[in-house]
Amino acid sequence: MIIPVLEDGRIVLILQTRYIDQRQSLEFPCGGKKEGQSPLDVAKIELYQETGWIADDFMKIGSFQALNGLVDDECHVFLAKVVEQKEQQLEDTEDIEVLYRRPDEIDEMIKKNDIWDGQTMAAWSMARHIFFEEKPVAKATALGTLQNIFDDFIGS
Image 1 (tube, rainbow, N blue to C red):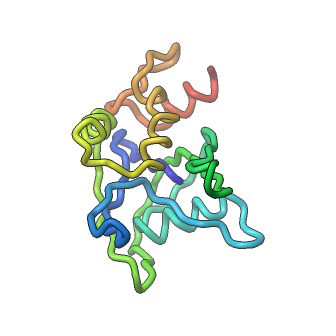
Image 2 (image 1 turned 135 degrees about the horizontal axis):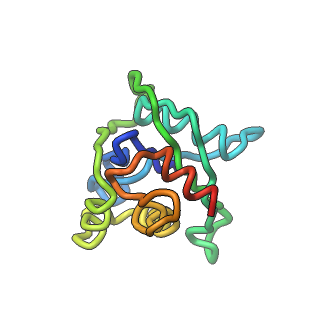
């Protein structure tokens, strides 16, 4: 799963229909790993396919098992600094809209249950502090640059 961040601090989300529930879901881009692929390989591919965005900097912030009592499916979470957008490369079965939100808007969408995807909420819980905590070098807010966020996070 990728949390893509623009230079202005907004975060890239996708809106797609989840057919099991027959409703639209706001999520961070993500996808499954095929044989021989690393989690970072998948992050780069899925980011580009689902959003059209290309990132020049990825930072793994953690991983988790979403349903460890039912399946062995580890989710790796990356923060990505996106720099260039091209055309989405969607699969035939995908209909995805790209949206942009500030970190505080993501918090509000979770509170209002507009974001109901468990993996997205888990990934956000791992990354949220990066955007809101005071840091010695720079305050990582929606108004700060991702480079400052990266510099701060790596330096701590």
